[in-house]
Image (tube, one colour):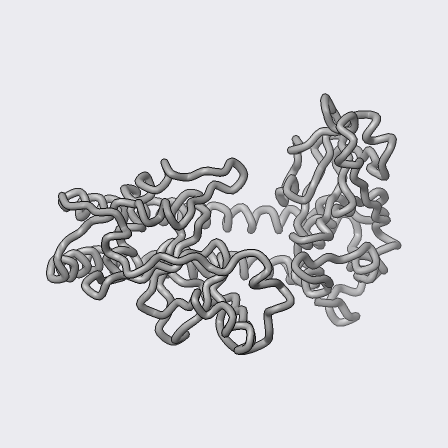
Length: 403
């Protein structure tokens, strides 16, 4: 997204970024030096601290010694921050005096622009910054990329008018999003009430192992490395594909036929369920879509092959319930990323009823939740539209067309 002479009013100037903002970046004290961190009181920001708003605290503090022995620099409150690694383009404005690591660029000087004006300009340019990211797993940009941008610069009073108009329109969108999110929460509560009513009436529960043909992990260790992935071939199910009750096909990964032959024991088919071993606020479990045919599940993805008399949909609905979540959560271990293993998954107690009763339960659930699902899709579409509207507002603002 660039600007040409046709994109802004004649009384505006188009300037190179270094004419408007001079960027700096911080540094990281050696992690092996405990005296650089222990007992520290200096706020030291990392990308996770950026919140697209005013930052008043940091997850990590460093000591004066850590500051002195690193390239971290103290920056004042009221400084614009931009993430250059990972979450490229994420923003923040310092509400406190602090320092940052090298993954964050900060505006150490500004000329002819206000802080708020540049904040919204950088917000608009986020998608372009992301497109310029380079690297493997974690893409990044440099200050060279920031300095390559052209900035439309209106008179200061016009900048203030633009910011005021953006904030008014964004406030209306915030209110609309809040209403939509409240409706989604109400739908979630209703969905759980339906599932609770259905499953608490079932009296017979058995270990999951009793109704499965097998429960199997994905290949671990060096059996599947980043270098094994190809542009096409055999599909790989990764953690990002597994959602709470549905398969997210937005990210596709493949391996070669040759590599598949060495790990084909981990093949999943559409009749299988695939569960993430990591547990957070819900159980991440889905069914492989029939259009994929077959795939291999990666490490931390557990395949569950049910006996023929068990309908996968019945188990998916059960695992969507809070009852199943509480059944599983007490087995979780690991403080940083709580997880379960395949043995614990086999031990989960699940409802056991006849195939005929499963059909009745599935029909009952789907008849009551179909309207909920439709409303939720509409809400998600509306939320996506509000984000598109924000970008449209910003584009009009920085082309001088926002009235």
